[in-house]
Image (cartoon, rainbow, N blue to C red; front, side):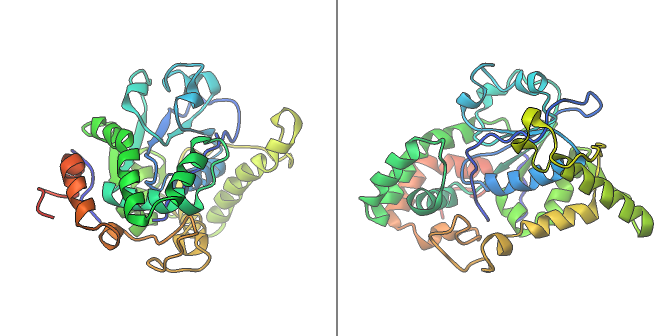
Length: 317
């Protein structure tokens, strides 16, 4: 498989976000495939800002209810004029009829997914459209942490099966690990945009840089307040002039604005706040929470997935 071996701020949005209407045949479909508790909310926030600045249409879909009227994800981009689609609870069976596109797919150490899901479902996750969350939280509140982790291990079975079923050998999809993204956001998003043919290699300076920055900001202003206006009209009537490639200086501003430290209220990675959706921001945290019984359970049920994703080479961990 092609998941990178390089070595988080996890978050999950449960509302569909469509930032503009209309489409552009000049810009081919781009996609992000993710999984619950693999930093989907953080990644989506960065992608949303990139698309706002570039003047591209962007939408997030979650579960089948998000594309129920189409049956699969395939028809949605063309039907709704979407240029960048984010599918954050990826199930490969709903992607088979997608037209030609380029994408990236992000996974995370499944053991850390379990721990992150436990604290998120117990304390921090806010998802008004996810009705199941209230029952899930009520159940976890009745259990000890040890029991709660077992509960999550069982609850996440379907997601782990979906991750195992994914085709990791698709040339048009860049395979990445969340650990890499959270360690070097600017470098990794530069790599993503280059793969997607969305990165501007030019070194912008002086007046040219100011002019390009203004154009990007005007695209973003074009959307400002749109959701509050009748007919989806912009609150501020500035022209939108799509930019098909993102300069590094603008990408750096976005990743800095959405860094873990700023999203976590000034905390550094490793400083834990269990009530925050940006709880800790480090990988390998499962070692602080799994006991021998959790480890044995994981080896029996999910060790093959760890090997498939490249997090382990055998069961001797």
